[in-house]
Length: 489
Image (tube, rainbow, N blue to C red):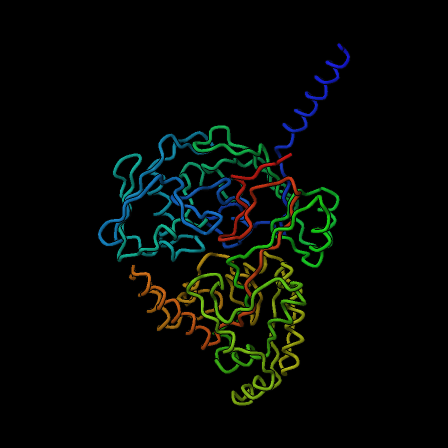
């Protein structure tokens, strides 16, 4: 009996130890972030590590895309949506132990909207007129015009709250208020975060999470099969998903994203400054062939810069239907012959694989391309900032971001006056019906101007250990939110 009891106790103890040890996770990511400060960088990979994990904003996106309270427990809307009063949670501290209060909110918003701001989404803050500290837990934000979308704007990763004491080093050693704190960054390999023991809200179930950077699809598949990574939320080898799905060790997670995948065109670079040339390129593209060939059938065709799952979406794919003969006629009408364009391809699978297919499609319509594969940092510097490109392929994963077309200095350089006026009207509109009508007009304008080649809405194809729960199925923003992730037995 003694031996049986001892054995039972031993088994119970070892089982408990095994369960207790299962509170860490390793996630695969295709791209390494260029830095870890979401308020000073445009790369989606930054938010994929830090959003809701390390940094928090006044509001946040939930997994269903809803806007939820975060550092602000609640807010009041006054003066017809021209004034917002945010009521902050009490007892919140940054990871370095300093208090988070209304002064930090004012600092963060004023910094984001400053003339010399490095924020990649500065337009989110353009309507702010004043930020006033009422007391340590109350902030009043006055806008220059009504904006019913302001809580949505504050949910972006670019709007997280930072501290003046640590902001200068956030790019390499981020200090936020979230349920995880930064542990280490081994560049070229991984970033590790660990549970914040002093978190003001519900503590994370995971004690540690490591983000490993694996850009090669073959290596990503091998890492999953070997158990070197526990989950790959944005898996770069969709052709292997059926094999992984048939393995009981894994669960395949397929959802939607906010990622409009486009063949971006430099609208100020001759001859792409001619709408007929841009239209010719658009008609040379066979979207389904790209979805099948590059994404193995995962993706939804789009004809404008808007997510098909959005209730205000219009299907405008017919305006740029595949018609290579029409492409040739438009080029002739524009007086363009022997056209050769530079095509810059960043690392993601959709760009590298899709780029080869598009190059062949353009060639069939008489348009030659010179492909250059660029790393993410080079793409940001040369294409996004330097605007030194003709064509490029990228997924815009920011939520509901059609307003980028109102920015004349944005990398594809559109900024049409009439479109800017539309976005100004949208910012003033608070009625749902009016906002819907404006958004549809905006979709039509950029589609008919053939600003870019609209390819497909990026699917979220992920794979995870079958014992992991809480990962997002859809991606309403570019995030690997680990706040609800846990292991089951």
